[in-house]
Length: 200
Image (tube, rainbow, N blue to C red; front, side, top):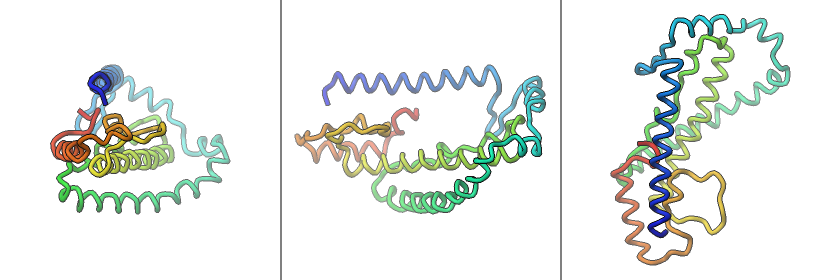
C-alpha cells in the first residue's frame, strides 16, 4: 500500500470518528442525555413518548399477522446465537492473551438501552432487546474475527469483497510478498497496543 493511500485511510478513519462524535452530540443535545447506563429525556419528550405508546391489545389487533406467525422461527435463533456468543467469548478469553491481542469489550457492541423508550410497549421492547443482542453479537464476533485475521493473515483478497471490517483496508495488498514476515510481526505487535480503527 503506498503512502498516499495510507494517508487517505488515516484521514477517513479520523473523519469517521469526528462524524460519529458530532452525531452523538447533536442527538444528545436535542433529545436526551446519557448518564452511565441511564438515558434521561426532558419532561416534555417523556410525556410525548407516553402519549404515543400503543397499548398491548391495540398493538396485537393491528400488528401484522405474518410477524406473529414467523415469531417462533425468529426467536428460535437465540439458541445458535447464544452458543456462538459463548464459543467466541471463550476463544478470545483463552487465545487473545496468549497472542498478546487486546480483547474486544463485549459491552461496546452489545448495548441494551431501547427498553428505556417510553413509546414502546413491552412486546416492542422485547423485540428491540432481541435485535440489539443479535446485531450487537454479530458486530462483536466480527471484531474478534477481524483481530484474528489481522494477527494471522492481514492480506487483502484479489477480488473485491463487500462489507469488509474496519481493519481490512489497512491489510497488505494481495501478492505483496516483500518483507512479509516483518510486516506481519508489526501487525501483531500493534494489536497489543491500540484500539480498533474508528473506535477512538
